[in-house]
Figure 1 (tube, rainbow, N blue to C red):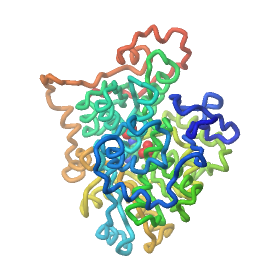
Figure 2: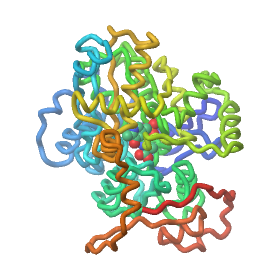
Figure 3: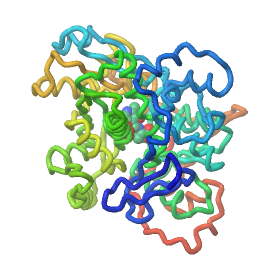
Figure 4: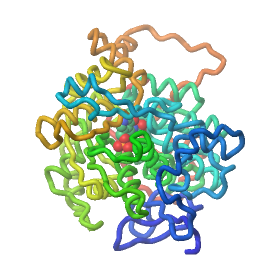
Length: 491
Ligand code: F0G
């Protein structure tokens, strides 16, 4: 392939390649996940990472000024899949803060200066997702997509809705029944996305939107979930910013909550590439933290021994686990609703990241997540419950002496505290605002821009109709029947 950027299946025994201007979410040959790859030898690359610093002072208007302003695109030489700088879709994302958290460190018996928190909640839509959306929307523009969609536990939908409004394309989000924190729902509705509340949970929603995006091309849907490899290109920048804030010295550990496992996968790719390019010498270790009520990665990696194994990972371990979940009718459940995911789609890439970054995985019960969320907020800006899993995970790893109090640790705080104010108020008062709302009489909304969530059964025909499509698009489409057993709980 003569292009400097292309897509490639991560499965080394397949390694099929695809052109950069195709919209795909899986390898057609083997079903594997796709990576964005570059022929670095044909690209102009900085010799040292401190090259990127000069962009802090750029204020110019026009495309390159806008791109310098973005905390994602100021590293654009490390994600050069776009065709022109004018085409980049940016809302000024990624201007986030790495804060040294000495007071919190003291509570955890760490030495001053050792613990830092990366506040990704400071992004325009309030979560780290904006880092990925700017890249995926840039690709969507490259391929001329007019309708973009995702399944979401909330933050992806908020970010998609914001970017869709900005880029003037139709945004469609699938959310599970009663599964989304109100802060996130409020954003999707306010930014004008068509919000379908599917009878089911996140895993059901993702299965449906993938079917429609892949098997029903007549619907013209561009998929924005993290199976879209362009999302992860943008999310690499979280690692670049941490290095930049630390004067290009890698920490000893990066700790991140794991849900669909896109973020940790992006981190692994960032370090894999920087090492390959000779831009860094040391790769930090990675800790991915699950909630105990959604612990697939921890079970597979820590207990069942699923390892990357140069790409030949034992897929049967995952298949057996999923079959047993089905048999017992298991549904993930955690107060950290953002990471309430039973079948993480980026599992293979996460195993690769754990290999590249010599990683560990742990799980944390809900009560500990909530205590650590409150602890983070007590000493600085807060975060939503899922984000605090990283700090709770650090605490556990310090207790286990896997991490020592002399090591440099960065915890990623993935989402803003106000995303889930209910969790905070409930922690401090015992009042569940969501439940209280259910008991109150409902008023018909009267505003001029009302955009209500649409409850939909978990079947394809109803979903297509709710998306404004003609059910005829399904004729000849062969999709396995699957119906969720999650009860409907309307907003
Ligand atoms: N933290 C927050 C606040 C999240 O919203 C998510 C994912 C994660 C952590 C986990 O990241 O999926 O890359 O492992 N939220 C997705 C969503 C699934 O739909 O908003 P991951």
